[in-house]
Length: 171
Image 1 (cartoon, rainbow, N blue to C red):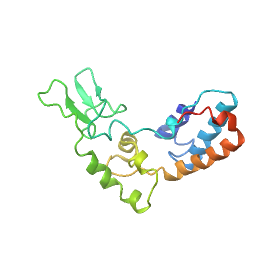
Image 2 (tube, rainbow, N blue to C red):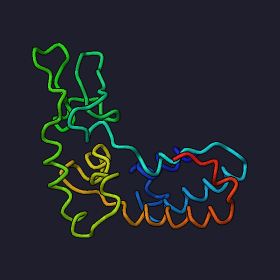
Image 3 (cartoon, rainbow, N blue to C red):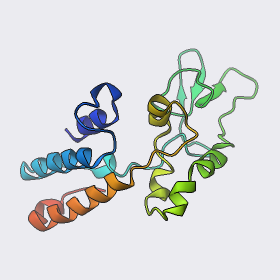
Image 4 (cartoon, one colour):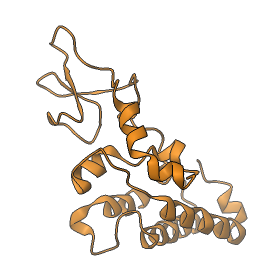
């Protein structure tokens, strides 16, 4: 259920529900979480606080290999987009390392640094595949600060409302 909220949140074709990473999508997420907790369902909050993605790792611990041997640094991007391509495993020297990613993230992070965003270590300027699809470039920041602050605030309220159920959450 919570993954569905995230998919609607990130799906441009469904933007009539609510804008991506908006306070409205945060409200929808927490409302679904509240229902799930009332039903006693196991909930893992990695949908909100995603771990560092494959793309942002200089030396990735995992890659996607397509049937043709092409390598992608992102589980969501399977094509030969140069922003995501890691070469081909059949090549004599495939480019598994993402040596320029630090420069890309730093270049995108000016707004994050000026605003002293506490979420920067987690979001690293936003999901690269989302930025490429919706903003047409990975060389920009997609700020989710308001969205994350709203969810954290509402999680605090939810913890007060359902303390026993809240203890069952996995982060």
